[in-house]
Length: 307
Image (tube, rainbow, N blue to C red; front, side, top):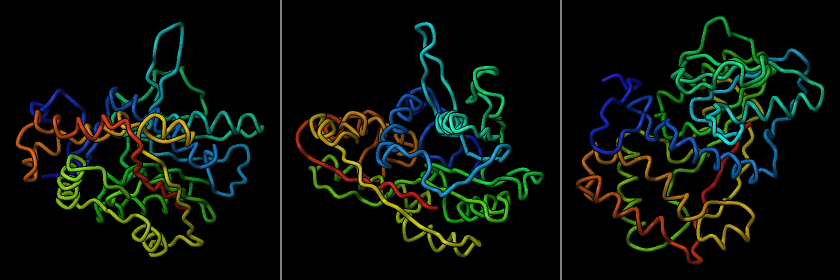
């Protein structure tokens, strides 16, 4: 089966849109709301910087962003609108404030995920492309490429294709910035429900070939593919009760953490439950205690930024 074919099977749970059978998280409105909050968590974790790369962009420079999984909600006359590419919108506005107008190319696997024409600046362009197969005309085009949170969609082969494509489209001397989560078991010990959940997730990751040590994997790979001066910065983000998150000023509540794991229910059930659950209802029961924890337990999930 083509690992980038759309997953059309939705009968095992409420309908969710998965752009690829390799993608473990959906790309729909429910996921959009979660990612909107997650964007703020990531930015706060990195001291409110949208980019850590030492950029010196000038007017007319081109920036590439893979936008398949970045969303935002914005208010407009009391209604909510789904806006794709929250990072691109904020990065564009930030540079405009500094008097630098950059052209930004945002790509995704489906045009259904793009915002309506006219709701964003003409300097931001949306197009349907895969990160593993970018247009040939983009060779040596971009001064900077920003790629975020695709670790749950790529195996080793796909990572190599993606990095090779990003290298090809960057200008000599350009910057690539990757932002990814650590997917190894987090620093925690919060009871049997979480341990069962992580047991099946471990098996799911192995089956899909998900890279679980991004720090030790990506740095050598980037060098192997031709990038130089590769650096990595790590931030720990707390996950726990509301009081824990409130006092830290950032992080995930237990409920928000559970919402993220709910997104993998379809791949888990389709995979047979990995000896832990047999049907979607059992997955819901398993996840319930893990998501509802409101006491002072903490999980630290590392966010890695590669430049």
